[in-house]
Image (cartoon, rainbow, N blue to C red; front, top):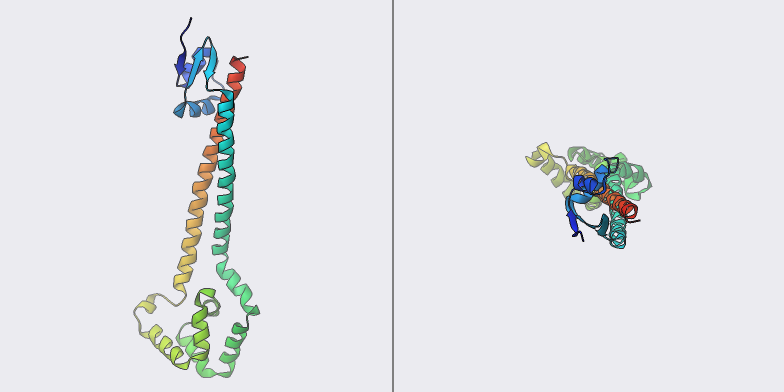
Length: 209
């Protein structure tokens, strides 16, 4: 009685069952990179179809999870990319924006402080600098001190107020892109694993009929 035989590569699999190479080669080679088969009397006795089907179910759950993560990071990327577009689009609906604009019109000194501090509407309406705007609007001493700091500090000669959050949004965008790329790569690999397992099931049914 022939002893069970272990097959751990595609060439051995073809030879065992007298098969020719075909389009299934990439999937079968992927399977044999980490798995093996056991045959007996020209039948595949390992793995079992139900075991492979269980593995496919696990992988399908992983795919659902990966897709959910991709959706999350795509949303994060979109939010970061459109951050300042949304700031500019929503500023007209904020009372503080019109209070700031009116004060620029009626108070020349306030307008000068805005220019000296190099504060744009984009920065002042940025939620990250809400406290700055609140204080700038009402505190005379704060405005003078901020204007003086911006014009004399070495730090502000190269970086304006607001640059930090702009860089932060760029980093968030790049990080999200990287995450999406990694997750898509993992998703593609998992899909290939499923195809490999489905191909193995096909051959088990073929040779064991």
